[in-house]
Image 1: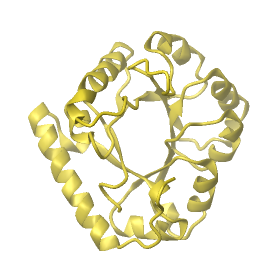
Image 2: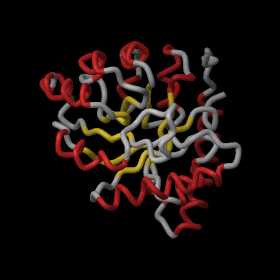
Image 3: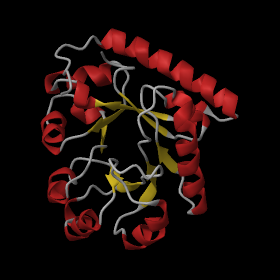
Image 4: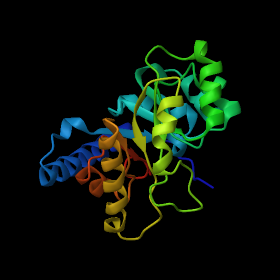
Length: 224
């Protein structure tokens, strides 16, 4: 179970956000990248719905929710319109109609059933909607995502624009153990001309940035 934070201190979140951006800038310097090419997404599953407005007050601009029900609740909160909302959790096909009117991006497209629902309910989507294909680059049985070899076919069948790829590497105590999986996703995206790479969480986002992440998905690094 996730421990939901019931009271957010916007000032503390702003301080943590600044610290995260400094770490991203350092990682970009090591990799010869522009830090402005990396977006920070706050995973809002850690935040109570009625605290949503404080996120924008703290300088958060990109919010990602894991559950459709929670997304609906949080997008409906006062101040939520100041945030760009994206869906980052495992997506059940039956939930596609619920989230389409609310999000600008879906990070976790990985099944034909979701592709079919995206096509069937295209009229519900926001005009700017694009998606990321979730790829299981490690081949771990417990992980969601398509196999790398399936990507070309999924790109052909996807009825909405595909901006890039997303992955979750196997759990590792040492962030360096995730580097090869982040590099593999970057190489796969390059082969298919895709520019967005959603990879890296609190424990390993600096390595992800060094390997090309353009979106890092953070929770406890920002709110705890």
